[in-house]
Amino acid sequence: RTTFPGWVSAMKALTKVTRSIKPAEVEKKWHLIDADGLVVGRLAVVIANHLRGKHKPSYTPHVDCGDHVVVINADKVKLTGNK
Image 1 (cartoon, helix red, strand yellow):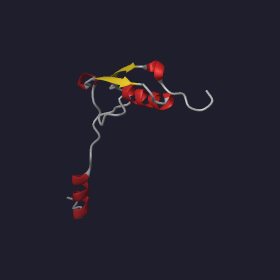
Image 2 (image 1 turned 90 degrees about the horizontal axis):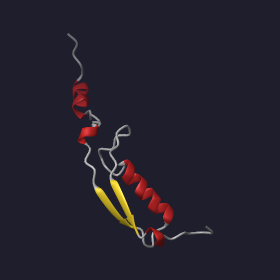
Image 3 (image 1 turned 30 degrees about the vertical axis):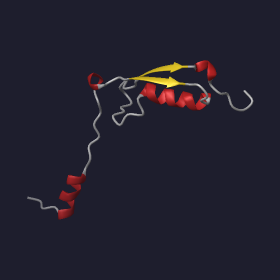
């Protein structure tokens, strides 16, 4: 029988487990974004993160855990620079 030092059992108690969600466990929500006066590039990043689900703590790369996004006033976005 092997006896481990006390710190080994303490390390096992502190070990965290990363849990991947399954496609059946995904809750999709609807987000309404008003694009009036927002910069187009920054708006695109926010929309992309919501579509992929990266804003959720349960984000799993191989599962579609993103939400639905509706953008209103898209014709009123701001273009910065010389575009």
